[in-house]
Length: 334
Image 1 (cartoon, one colour):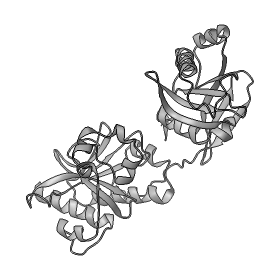
Image 2 (cartoon, helix red, strand yellow; image 1 turned 120 degrees about the horizontal axis):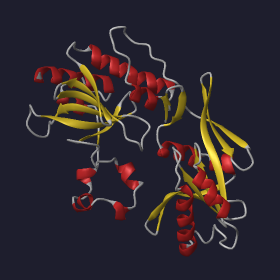
Image 3 (cartoon, helix red, strand yellow; image 1 turned 30 degrees about the horizontal axis):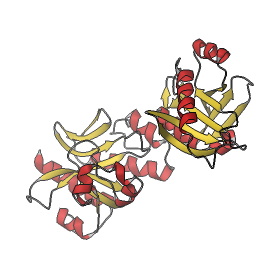
Image 4 (cartoon, helix red, strand yellow; image 1 turned 180 degrees about the vertical axis):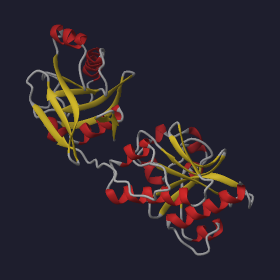
């Protein structure tokens, strides 16, 4: 959620900032949320909402200064006024509010605001830290009124073996938005992997942290901007195929148990759980997903009997024994 650059904290992405504002629209602006990432005439509005008088409110958020934010809001206004979605929730005869949120504003933004006939509001955003408490401050440029929202973010406390290197900063940044118990579960998993073999290496590359040696990987933590939690991959036996074949598997986990799994050779893949597919309109499902009867892109439930097929001595759905199997398999491949 947050990252630290020099002595200052900020949101790791516009998506992270947008998520916080979207989830707290009522408390921050007394607005009713209507749609996030709304596509209208080929353009995408960050947030569309309505006020107490059913007036249309369009919000655009930036994680850095952007000289074109006013032009964006103006185009969104024009598109929405033509399309007029949510007619029962919005009274289009009422004045429309355009809200721009950014850490700072370019001087061109103020020139645009000066001559724009529309109702345009600027809010600066800033992350505040007081001891262990983090907050988002939104301050109106016009009135100087501030709104403070406490964030669900905790600096990660690292307590580990002195033989281990410090965790990569990308991992610490992502874990901050998670409960302390989950943070420590992931750090303990990292420690277990790194201490399993003196040849084990931890490598940050692109969106991932790899655990292995050279091209032989054992585990991977993948960071997707749409998800706060790291996504775990383990190199396990492809038991449906050749007995000795090894493949990269995505693991859906609560960091104590394995819930679902799927063979995903590269990247994040398109495989989702059934519940995740239900959140997506059917007309946006991949063609292959529809043609293959959904099963090829639906993650399998992980049941305890699978663990013995993968190499565990006893049936279990716990994460750690399966990680140990991945470690043992990795050692045999070196």
